[in-house]
Length: 203
Image (tube, rainbow, N blue to C red; front, side, top):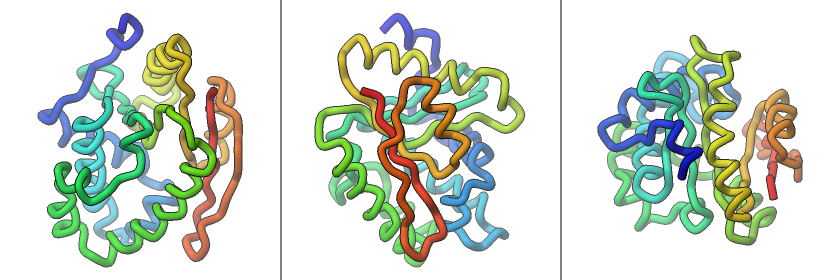
């Protein structure tokens, strides 16, 4: 696709540096704090988590960086792979993720994502693309890299007449995504987590 040619498509060899970009981008976000309560190991655990997510998306979807310098990273999944199952996650190294992150952290994440996944299925029961993560390194934030990552895929999906779904936990992000044509579907609270999510759809 012509628009996507402006981006750098990630491969397995880029997983380690791209995971560090996402770790820095999401350093203080509520979801990361909930998933990894220990501040001492939070960044280390986040890198392990994002390495798994990158591997999963590279296998089943599309992962892009703004350039070879990895100022920002966006992960995209077709809807048929948005809800993970044991067979899919095994190929992406879920066993290694569990061994490194610990069963307690995995259980914490599984309970939260069960709620989030159910909301996703409720709000987008049709074919679409899912944006689970987009992040820009703090050193490059405010310089247009998020837009550079979003616009090419959104142009492609508009041309193909395919909706796009996402969630965010940050209220200020709602206005940003609204600017790109997303509509807020629901703000919901995941019980006992302290984390609110905003479900958004661009049709």
